[in-house]
Image (cartoon, rainbow, N blue to C red; front, side, top):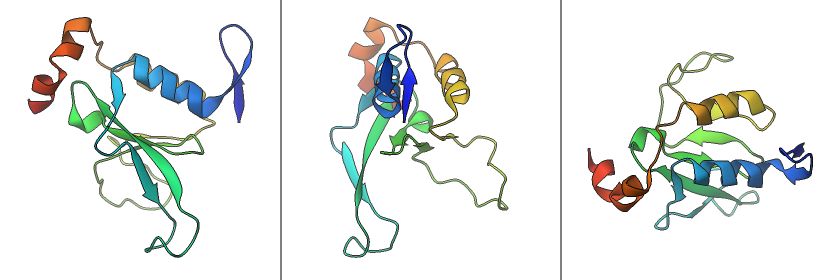
Length: 125
């Protein structure tokens, strides 16, 4: 899917999301940068896909996965809830939910240059 950016150009929405997240306190988890997942229990069944693992500078609770279809999902497990309902603290944003994504990004803690330098120590808290 493509969306129009601020200049009116058509851009890939997944790459746009990745770029926005990287500018707002996220970085690619180099130890777990590309995660392979599949719909089935084993990798042999089904076609595996790539998932980008993103970690936040400040809080482990904000660590997310970015899927190839644009879905953003929280890395920490959440309790199972009845069908159709979302867990209140769960981060789950589908590709077509652009407004929800922009609201999520605007509520992220602001990252300054010195935060990036000491990000390892900040994540320990």
